[in-house]
Every structure is written in structure tokens, then in C-alpha cells.
Image (cartoon, rainbow, N blue to C red; front, top):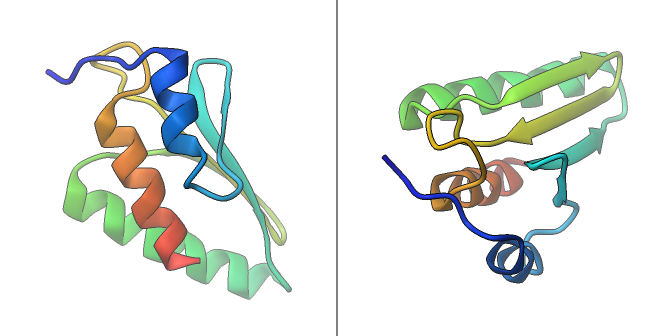
Length: 93
């Protein structure tokens, strides 16, 4: 099982991840797209990535907005795996 990171370590890593922030013990990012189709296409790419990595974010979608939250539920907080997933998701956008 992965070990949780403290807020300081998370903050250092988030400096290199545009738009991501620590909120409520989770990594969170909100995306806005031109329309629903673009948002849904992005969601589909995130879903395929999550399946390949076997690490599944919490995702909300409302029309052209997508909100993604990451945390390692088995570890009870943010781990290196979450930061790696955030970087991979960022590369999709």
C-alpha cells in the first residue's frame, strides 16, 4: 500500500501541475470546455487512462465543466500515485 504524503510534499509537487490544488484532503482540478461533446471526449480519455493505471478518480460533469478529484482511498489520503495520475490527466488536456 502507498503511503500518504504530507501537505508540504504535496504542495511542492503541485507547483508543477497547473490548475491542481489540495482541497479537503484530495487533489482537485476543474476543467471547462467549449461544449458538452468536448467535455465528454475528455472524460472518455480520463476513463481509459484510469482503467490502464487501475486508479480511478472521482469525476463530476455538468454540461461543459468537468471536476476531477484524486486520493488513494486504501491509504486514506494523497499519495505519489495520485500525483502521477494528476500529471497524466494534465497531459490529456
